[in-house]
Length: 108
Image (tube, rainbow, N blue to C red):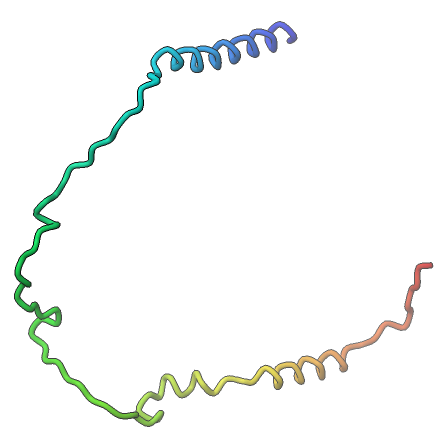
């Protein structure tokens, strides 16, 4: 068992030094200068493009003003939630109705 463990550690050490030592000789001390391709067509001035309609064939309508909440029945029901205070009072009442323990242990 000891021999197997020793050989495994020796193999791992050899592999680690091989990775480190192999890359040391290939790294150059000269800096690498990256040149990005230039896209001159994207940086030049050009006339504005023609207006495009993203809506397809539908028409655009515009209105101002406020609509009553009755126009949105699905949103009116969500706004009528139970308040946090009412939930807290209900939980306090339920907690008061629970059975209390007759024995209280005090560790001293």
